[in-house]
Image (cartoon, rainbow, N blue to C red; front, side, top):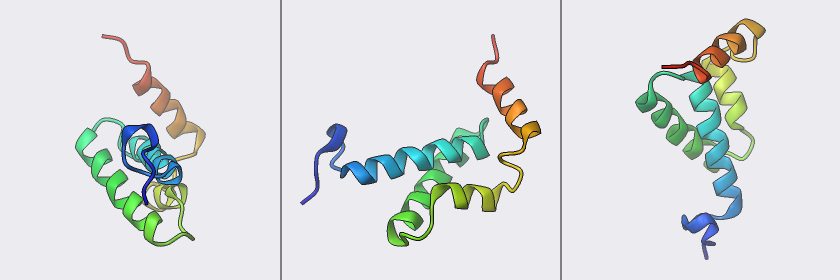
Length: 83
């Protein structure tokens, strides 16, 4: 039986996995919403079927420099852009 966590017919674990996939997908593709959504859906399916993989591992596999200081600095500029 599925729980109705946050009104989404997901268990709490699935909800947390989904939000983690969304977060890392946005980090890999901050300007293309369609690509980020596609990545998040794909990673959610992979992580749900294979419990040994995490969204962070899949994100680093796709974007090896994801957690480098230079890339993080550029991400912060995109997040807080005005106008």
